[in-house]
View 1: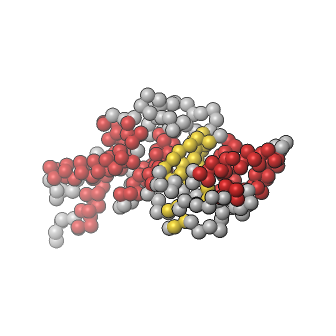
View 2: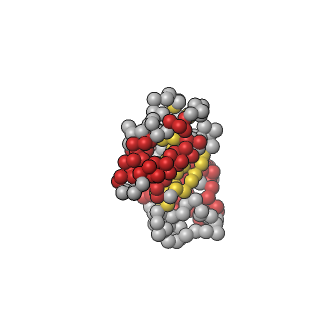
View 3: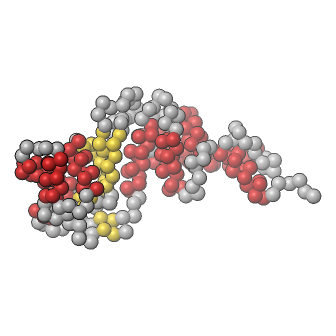
Length: 260
């Protein structure tokens, strides 16, 4: 009876060694020279993909430390997907679950999430057509404004939009950062830091899709006990008009302008 491992067992040993060569020995049937080629090919492919997906994070590391970070991700169970486009998302999930992986960079997970959002929206299959009604802005109060499906609103504890080699904050912000990220009709991804009012308005637009612009703004004015409801509505209307121009919102719920 042959003592050779089965083909399936050889595959398991090969994959385990590629993932973590320090912990798992290579298959006996493959010489080390050939195995080294495979090791370098796999890890360099992953490192290259992540470098392109997270350019700011990559700029914060020298080559050696970057390879160590990629290797740490690569040998963990997060790296399960056979699809290359899904690897950046898994890398973000890995950093979320290992937020102490680099104590020098306490912002690492949030920065990765911020960079991934741009990549995610760039490749999203949904298309938004420009609304061409010249009177669209005038309808914002009396129709239901709809947030584009290509808009994301997130709260961060670090100034992710400012991080670079020369600015790596070690402490969290005193007040959270509200960041809106969206893709417009020209396929350009935009980022903007929002004040608390704008973030609250956008969040309510996302969560109260049955209210007209007027109803939503009046509801917010009452909830926050704003003394001049009419003034509050007019202030909110100016924000809605700006978002309409930026493709953050779609003016009327019954308009069929979304393509999957």
